[in-house]
Amino acid sequence: MDVSQINHVVSETAKHYSRSMSVNDLNHISGSLATQSDEQILASGAFKRFFALPIPADPKVRHFSLFVDQDLETSDRLIKQMYKLTTLRELLLLSIEKISLPNNHPLMVKYSLAVAINHSPHFQVLKSQVPQALVIAPSHVFVDKNIPKRWRNPDALLKWWREDPMLNSHHWNWHTAYPSFGVSLDGVTPAKLKDRQGELFVFMHRQMVARYDCERTALGLQPIDQFGSNSYRESLGDAFDPLISMFVPRPADSKMRDNVSGTPPFDSISIVDLEIWRERLFEAIQNRSFKKSVTQQDGTVTTTEIPMTIADLGSSLEATMGSPNKSYYGNLNKQAHNLMSRVFDPQGEEQTSIGIMGDIIGAFRDPMFWRWHKHLDEFFHRFELTLQPYNIVDYAPANIRIANAVVRPVYTTAPFIDRETGLVDIQLKQAATPLPENNLYTYMKTQIIAIKTDGSVVNAPRSHDGESILNCYETNRLYYVPFNYEISVLNDDAKYKKVVVRVYIVASDDYGDRRKWISLDQFFTALPEGQKEYTITRSSSESTILQQAATEEWPGNWECLENVPAPSTETYCKCGLPRNLLLPRGTKEGMPFKIAVIVTDAKFDTIVYW
Image 1 (cartoon, helix red, strand yellow):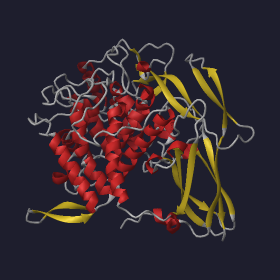
Image 2 (cartoon, helix red, strand yellow):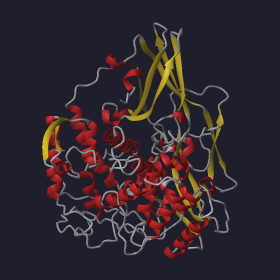
Image 3 (spheres, rainbow, N blue to C red):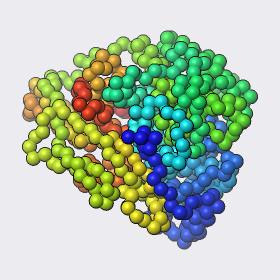
Image 4 (cartoon, helix red, strand yellow):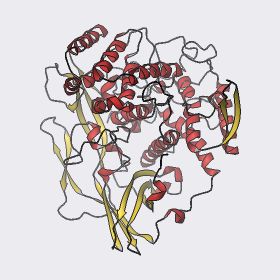
């Protein structure tokens, strides 16, 4: 396989969108709203078309980045404007007005709109009209095959993982669900972070790093070599070329350098700043306390010591509004991303160019992302070592034992040639008899998709007139054969009990490393009254780790799911792991893994809000 051709543009339509053409299309949408009710606007799919419309940024406008505080502040101001609105027509008109302004980056407006829809109580009905990032910004997701390979990328064997279109979308989705500036539902009351947001930042990135390490183990590669364990002044290593025209490649042996001039909109930042923040965070971890800044009624600022929590530590590293003292503990994660993205231009003189580490959608593609976040996980690991370990007995339900736990595939597989696409596909057939237990299967599949003007993603037709198709893309993605968990539980007193089940997997070679365990599922269930022996059966497709099936919007029902219920506006979320990536790929010959199943009393996972 030519790894340079993974997840790339196949063809472009004859209609190349210029900024003026896109603005004309927006004006047409705007004009049609005058006589439409909110119900008609909702039914028309206008918001999804808005998100999908290719709108090039003005050549003079700098790239929008969620790692740049000034960009976050610009977006936050627009989001607060949106929160104050109450009708869909007002929201769409404001969005069209802002995105038409040449000094606004289109991605800033689309991000702001996605956040407002995600959180505003007035716009929950629009959640299904916010497409994946691969639709919103395909030029950040798919390789331009017309760019010649300038050098061999590092970790080329894992391009399929880092460049999975839905994985890139996942990072965007997570940051629209958990904005670092918090949420103010009416745009007036003070914003606040989502519950345990800093802890979820820790969990999400740790799981991503653990998974990347597992894929490396399967290929016989060494674990991720964390960047920054010795010095932030060391080489960033091999060259990296994202093969995407808007992002500047990184030469080999590049180093982060001071941006002392503070060229707007970038803060004046030096490597010394990063080192000071690192040492202050390590000191806080050692003391298990933060120096929290408190503003008194008279405006004076004082400092007080507060106990450290993992949520506060996550907020400090991400430098969200939840940081106990951002002026003291700094902005380590974002500023490191900024300096890594500007190694070709440390003084910020080239305002419209950026490396891919500065992009929230594309950063996953760069091996440096994984090396950097392996380093950030070291902060959390050090904090955990200061804590007393949990005693599982204290959290176990009374008179409960796990007798056995197995996994069992529910389908047999057969390759075939898809007549519509001409590509090899895998057909799943319901097994007539139980299949052998404790064997799981994965496979790679090439698929050509098309993004349509209405924002939908479909299997690309062999021929099309180009009117409704924006672009076609060839993808090569990992899939797994769905399976069931069968967890046999002994309930000695046969009383009704509500429990939480957690399932983890790890490569057998990494069994002894706690940070290598990958979460597969965690869910509430009940043990019925009157049964001393009970088997908990659950499908892998029900995993709460995954994005909900009804929200993923990827063509082809590869899981053979039937009658998937639409989520309610309260439960609609796209921030889970892409459904195809639940299991590590493993090896062609078969790779040994271990699974751990933990059952705890549900009362310890019940959150009471006062």
